[in-house]
Length: 243
Image (cartoon, rainbow, N blue to C red; front, side):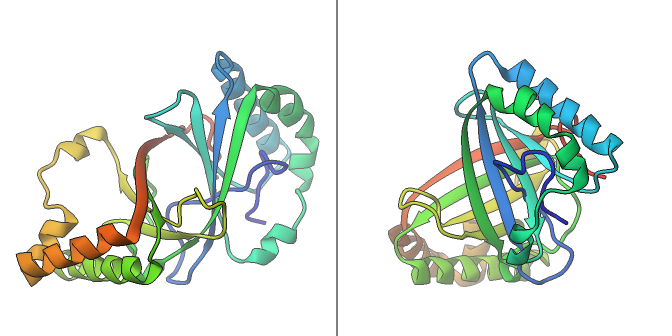
């Protein structure tokens, strides 16, 4: 069962990569911890992780620290092969560790935001290498057809020039009118990677199709987007269970 384990009553999860080129259902849950409760929350997650492993729990999960914005925000991630996994109940190990979750984790949580997404392998990087850091940009879209036509065109130009896309795209499944409709995740290993001199995707597209066509596509993209925002996330290995 690919569903969790650690906060099954409040959160499912998602991983960066996937095993093949089929679309996967991905879950991203943001947890905001109460002011001054960060140490207790971290300790509670570590206790749960230890308990779950000692009871032969087989599920895995990733905890990510959000770098910018409000303090003490975490993202918990995992992937499901299909919607049917939502029907599965908690495994025996998570049941045995339920008291730790109720007493040592949940009292320190202020807010939870749960998002379900569908991966878009046709326009995403093919690599399965795990990342320790990721830059995620969220998009709220008013014209889905125009937005995706530009994304596919630019992703195609990058793949043609470099042999593969740079990032992982996801379509959000449902949510409120203020939620994102799509998100894209760029993985990297260390912050020094952000200092590297590399053409942006629009520059790559421009080299292939020229400045006039690029300006036209950028205008089409901007008109299709109602809003966008970005965060960097760093994986917390002490809180993650990866095997």
